[in-house]
Amino acid sequence: MISLHALSFSYPGHRPIFDGFDWSVSPGEAWAILGPSGCGKSTLLYLLACVLSPTAGEILIEGQPITRPRPRTGLILQDYGLLPWATCAQNVSLGLRIHGFYGPDGKHAPADAARGQPGAIAARTDHWLHRLGLTHVRGQYPSQLSGGQRQRAAIARTLVLEPDVLLMDEPFAALDALTREDLERLTLELHAETGTTLIFVTHNIEEAVLLGQKILVLGPPPHRRPCVIENALAGGPLDGGAPEFQAQCRGLREMLGRHA
Amino acid sequence: MRKRDVLLAAGALLAAWEIAALLLRREILPPPTEVLAALGTELPRGLARHFAVSAWRVVASIGLAVALATPAGLVLGQSARADRLFSPAIYLLYPIPKIVFLPIVLLFLGIGDTSKVFIIFLILFFQVLVVVRDEASALRPELLLSVTSLGAGRRALFLFVYFPATIPAVLTAVRLSIGTAIAVLFFTESFATTAGLGYYVIVDTFSRLAYPEMYAGVLAMSLLGLGLYFIVDALERALCPYLFVR
Picture (cartoon, chains in turn orange, cyan):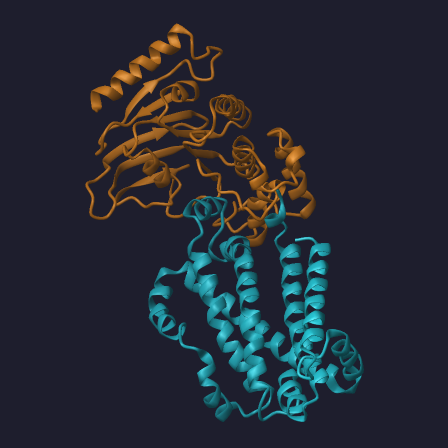
């Protein structure tokens, strides 16, 4: 699904963050990328989103080298990125309207995307508003929504486009603990329902253990080879208090501590 | 602000004026009752036409300034390279009081509507340009990034992000410019012309010492400014409902 070959990246005038890095992700997997601030985990996500370009090496998604943002890759940031002047429903339908604006050109919208009839856009928007529990606030503006509702709107806006890769950059870091757990569970459910490949960046060890079937641990840069932890506990019934869960977290914490 | 409060304030101002006129008892300060009566008789006798001419000039200038400065500001605001290229020129031109170009504009464009519209346009253009540019360049990169990730290229970003993002700023720039626009209009209409409220007040009534009529002209000019202000408010409510939610 996704493979990185000898990927190198550095910001101009800085030491390299990735230096000949190889990594691969199979379709439908849920990955967590875990590491402290400044380790380059968001940079990796932006490289996958093709917002940044590698200085050397290449990224293949479905066998195709990516040279521009892919229409089937969804990106969700901690900053919800909702349009303040658009209602919740208008924000959720934004991507569909953008695709309708360009037509199925394969560059901005998938080549097989149906031409957006207004009725079809409304039906798909309604479906995802309902799935994320936003129907009752569909006419409200982002300033009127809670943080959790805003992030739900951002998720709905991305999923309405049926992405096959979903990139999330610390999406719940600014939310309170209860909302955060709620949305972590929702992310697991949505991953199971849609079968999309999920790559979730976080600095929170518990969150990584809860969401990542595989966890890519990033210490201090530069990164040359991936350090991958298989995590059978992801999406399981265990809560954060279970001994196995805590043991896994402790292991990861020690591993990150060794790097530091 | 509630309508009732605005009407009350208007009533209070008229009352203060009436009292001042009663106390002063001089021909040069007629009471509002007399001025309103003069307004009633003067409107059909030419004042309405002067009002229409002035309103057309100021609305045309504002429309032209917004229509040209908004796209220019959007281009400068979203392209750092374009901004670097043009910002020194804008930096030099922005603070110049454009009104001093009036004699030059008159020489090139004559004394008709064109020169009046052009000089007001010139003043408003830079106001709107700078506001739109700053607003567009201040858009959060996260917002642009997430909309880009939905498939938006440059054209869709203009349509779905930059343009709606700058509407409130354009309306604010217009609102702040209305006063200047009408002041400049008043000045340009006060010589070498035969129509407009400036002509009516300065050239016609002031020189004939027809005080109630002159006051009626001043009142009409004030109402022109106020009316435009109300129109901008109504536009903001219609175009930017999100600014008015709790």
